[in-house]
Structures are given as C-alpha cells and as structure tokens.
Image 1 (cartoon, rainbow, N blue to C red):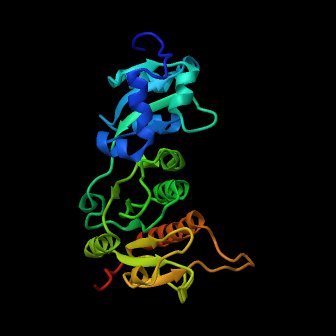
Image 2: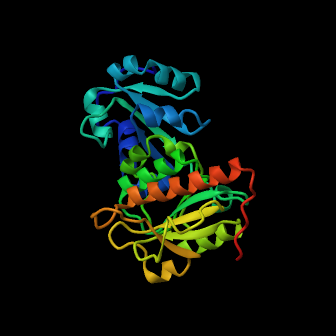
Image 3: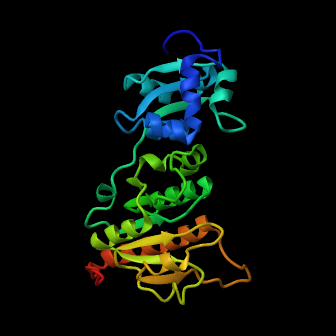
Length: 279
C-alpha cells in the first residue's frame, strides 16, 4: 500500500479518477473505472489493464487477495478514506475497491475472426444495465464476442461495467462500427445473422440454431427498425407461451444466446460439421 491514506476528495489523483465517470474523459484518457471486487479481480487477470487501485482499509483486509495480486502485478495501490471512496463510486453502498483500467476493446476484425460461432450484436441498445447483462450472458453462453455498434451505449459506462460482472474482461468486445458494417463483417466471417424481434414470423422453435450465428439485438423500447431487420438473414421471435406481452431485452437475449449455444454444442457433440450459410 503506497503512501498514507488519501482523505481529500479534491486531490489531483482522486479528481483524475472521478472524472472517468464521464464518457468524454474516458475517451480522452482511454481509461475507465472498474468498481467492486469482482470487476477488479477480473481486470487483474489481464496484463497491463489495471493502471491503479484505490482501496479502503476495510476492503484491504477483506479482499487481501485482490490487493495482494495488484501489488504483485506492479499496480500502484492507494488506501483511501470512506469519503473518498464514496466520491469515486457510482453505487449507493461502495464495496471499497476501485480500479482504474485501460480500454480493453479490440478491432471488429480481431473480435470476430473467421471461425467464430456465436456473436451478439447490439444495435441502438441504450440502457447500460441491459447492455452489461447481455455481455455477461454472452460470456456465460460461451459466445466468441460482443459488438457494441456505434449508436449503442458505451461499454465502459459504470453501470454497464458493473452489470457485466467481470465479463467485460473475459471475451472480445468491439465498439463503434455502424450496424451495417458489423453485419457485413460477421457474415464475411461465416456467420449467419438472426435478428431477434417480436415481428418475426419464425420462432426459436422453427429455426435450426446449430450453425454459426450472430444475433442482432435492438433498442429496449422500439426494437429493430425495418432497415436493420432487412440486414438480417432471418427475423426470429422468442415464442411466448403464457400471457406476458413480451420479454425485456436482456431476458430475450439470454434465451436466444443459450438456445444457439445449446444447439451448437449438440451439433458438435454428434460430430456434425455445421454448414456455412450461403451469402
């Protein structure tokens, strides 16, 4: 633990970290905040990603393994007062650890190479909690990548980072590409594109999901507009067996991604080579 406890919320170091709550400063500094033990622990698994770590005395004791791993990796660790941590944190009850991390996204071509089998494409997804949950679900389902297209939320938004529960550091994430460009790239990489939308004539029950697939997910409120639906090879809806009107974005994405993951695993388990969709 370097130096004495930081107690002044106006200190230059604290102010420099706190401003990363705003996207303009994140983009300028190419850095973001990873709040809480889960995010910090996963960030530390990637060499050179964590720039510095702030920890309260209580968190230093409670999460000695994480603080020790940071110190062992040469990451400067600064003890801070509860007041300073509250200033840095974006949660009501901070857990006492805050990492400053370098951006981890990669170019689209690197995130989705030829041979990828399952990808989530986020088109106009604006809610950071939903986006982070989709990222976490994609990771759990064994997806190869998540693509945040240009009109979607910043994956480094604090709420998105927290909702991803460390998955931001587990699988390739690409950002900034227009939807049409992202669709063209994943198709060139050998994936068919399925748009998840309630207007689809086909349901998950009707579609063979064993082939390499990129799922296109739209905005929470209005879904996918016609011009984006036209980019997909097929529009697919999640069947509703009960009386609910619809599913929210994160839930629908979980159903679609897991349906594909299960079908692909069954295909591979039976030793079948999925056919590459015609382009």
